[in-house]
Image 1 (tube, one colour):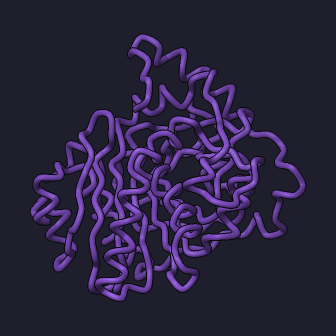
Image 2: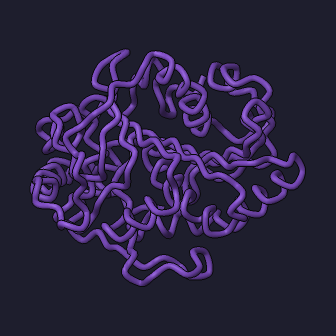
Length: 313
């Protein structure tokens, strides 16, 4: 569980964020030749994201109703989904669920997020720390790879039980892929899950990630590792959302590949690179600091769908 500073520290946190999120040069090894090229997503591609958005939305609902897939509009939007495991207490451990999606023959793992103002305060802490990945969970990963300590600690609380359930469902249904989803803090956990699953499942199992309003999770070495292991990943940012620009790059953090930026309703672009896109439509350019952003965009709408505790109906 994160330490969350009081509301009285929020304004101070915003100024720390502004300093930490100032654009600066990316090391040459991280640059890509095509960082100025964006691709507009078609209406069909945007519509295809809707089930994943609903999965992320459902993760905010109580496990008692998610277990029966009776969580209102989010559950109704993905009929036939079979939940096999739920957990979390919305306090020390974020809600989560695991289940099988027959339509895509995939196992889905979803994590709950947290209140955006609380998360923003935590991620702008000047003393935020990174740590190496636990080798028992992430075997064979070099010590140069570091991630946010709070994210790593939260992920470790449920990693083993979720992996065991995923393996069981793959065996039971002969599933050929695992899909990781989440919003906000849940998005950071899903990003960690992508690499965790890639390292602990057979190479024949495809890994897919779809996350919403994802903060930066680790350092450039983490981003490079992620990009080498997970090719099917979409990191969706909504308009002027602030959360995707924290923790700041000057604090040593870097995003992984796969940004999809919703510029406005019905208009989204795929941005190249990690944190080095140069097109004005990409988040790193359109939200250079907190004063240019809007924290309410963190909740949505993601193509008409809002995500958060108050939208679990």
